[in-house]
Image (tube, rainbow, N blue to C red):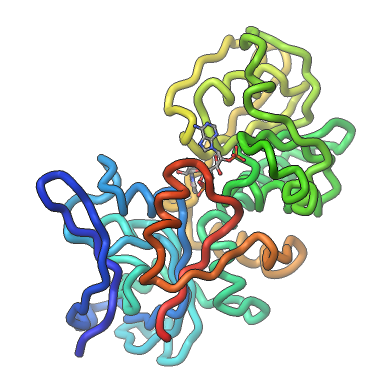
Length: 327
Ligand SMILES: NC(=O)c1ccc[n+]([C@@H]2O[C@H](COP(=O)([O-])OP(=O)(O)OC[C@H]3O[C@@H](n4cnc5c(N)ncnc54)[C@H](OP(=O)(O)O)[C@@H]3O)[C@@H](O)[C@H]2O)c1
């Protein structure tokens, strides 16, 4: 039996995607087959689709680090046919064909049951971006950071950034949002930001070894010099959750934020985090941390995602793209 997938092919070093039909895999021991209803588009998926080095080992390949759907076959006693499930990260969409195919074959210990209060579209509106944002925010709440000073979020209109803005605002923090987009104030305010800071203006003064500590904490989704500046501006005992590198993989810092203010730099790796942490984060997102993401989510059929991939690579995506399989 065949299934449809959006596959990336390599031809002499150039990469392009197209819809293909692939053979349905047979189920290995302790694996499940999932009929995917929705996936989502994350920055890593766009890198996989563009052939960026270090993401996918070999092509042709079906990307998609996020999966929402239903079990159609299982060799694991933890699941039954018909269970609604979610899977994110691990090697999905990197070494194991991912959610851009309408069937995925995954180890059962990468899969969780979808919380009842989330339908598949809601779940993929969060996707990896959502659990990454929740993990970043949880570092801040776990450190009992008070809301006396604002919390800063970079890459604020992006997937992880926009959900971080929403979560922090919901939890009672004043959120200041750094963005490169001049015309998105209204969108960012509606997400929960109280102050919008243009990226160029934020970076107009050179980074200092220790700047005024005007932020209680921060979620940085971009890395590079922006992270350097953020670290220098976080007040005593604040947390900087660091998860992304769209602005650069390298950053510099003096030791002063750490030894004079006790600032903590907290790294986030949502892909490889334990299933129990993923369950905890999904639980938060489907209960007390739940957000209405409808206005910042676009649903796109799988065969129409080329332009969305380009947009995310150019840094022009806003909010979340949910990918729909089937008619
Ligand atoms: N560590 C983890 O577990 C984990 C999980 C998920 C994602 N990530 C990483 O987090 C980052 C964001 O992912 P995403 O899926 O949210 O991507 P996204 O939707 O494309 O958001 C990235 C945002 O960063 C800003 N940006 C783009 N180019 C920039 C540049 N050159 N300099 C500064 N800012 C720039 C843009 O927002 P503005 O225009 O509003 O500034 C953009 O919308 C990526 O690096 C991704 O790999 C890490």
